[in-house]
Image (cartoon, rainbow, N blue to C red; front, top):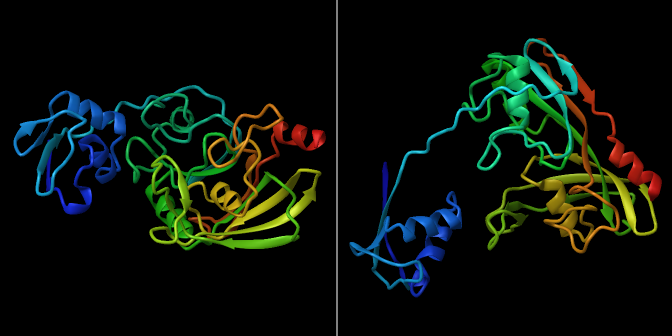
Length: 302
């Protein structure tokens, strides 16, 4: 059990207690905070208050957080499309709709559940029981290559390559609008969205440097088929960057605008090429994930 206690400053005065805590404790969901307040777990100056309580300057807010209990993550016999595998790493072609690792609301049916069945105990433990072997991830509705490490040494080596931006990561995507230039680079910092905690955004003040290189593969009447190469690897990087320059990805319901005229499940984005220096041999390995059926069918329609 961990205790949190802080004093309200002038800039937080007259803020609702539940809204204030959601801002200050960005690791907790708004609904969880509202539940804590409703159950009387949050006090102001030693007194239990309602969620609508308006804070005053120098109010002392206190509450306890129980230690997080990690659920048991179980192996599941889910078929894997394996692109490459040896005793150190495994590269998987992740299908659309599959979450990479367990999180609240998704404790089964994830790539980790499938990997635990396929690999048994042969997954690195550096990222804990919730994310064994996972060094990076792609979004639920993004398809394509994900590299997973089978031991801690491989994990450290691949993680260092990710940190140094030396891993080759090329994606293909279809975005809205017609891009005029044949190629370009987007160099805009990405951080948490200032008002919507579930989204990322170009954030000049608090973001981290993010660079996406793109080139046009084919132009259509209202859309553009592009290839993107990541120089950095921020959360939702391609989706945020393309939206920021006025070309959100087709089907992206979070960063796009308007409904797609096509029947799509999320953004049209595929992690096609993944290249890395092998953690044991030191040789460069490059793997390509086949373009999924939904993607080729969309290109045919366009």
